[in-house]
Image 1 (tube, helix red, strand yellow):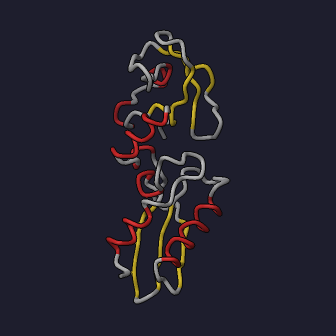
Image 2 (image 1 turned 180 degrees about the vertical axis):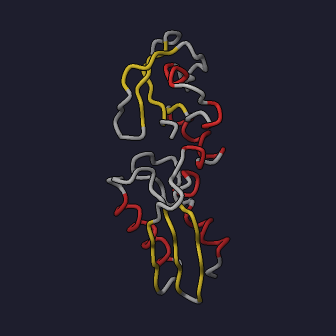
Length: 159
């Protein structure tokens, strides 16, 4: 049955192309879902305006919903409320940590840029870490080094 609740549940199965342990729902990319008979309208906001995975996300959302019985899927991209790392669910933050990425701190904790010099290591939990590069494998990650367990790790950037 096509209902808003079912669609959100099904979209838990659509993973972020760059971080496959994180659903688009938990990432906070899915902004709105509407159902009109067998037609579904989705509003998404990617993490970055130039997100290279945007078309892949739209395709995977459409394919998932068509398999579930939608006759038509319309996906609108909206930037009216910019995506923020605060949009990541608690479940998503746990998944990031289990994947080996430090979850971003909430924006209300960021009072100055010096705070971003140190991130909590997802392996040992210490904050005795150093920012090595503001640019990781993707635009949304930074690279840190843990002085305790001596491992490099990435943090999902707070935005």
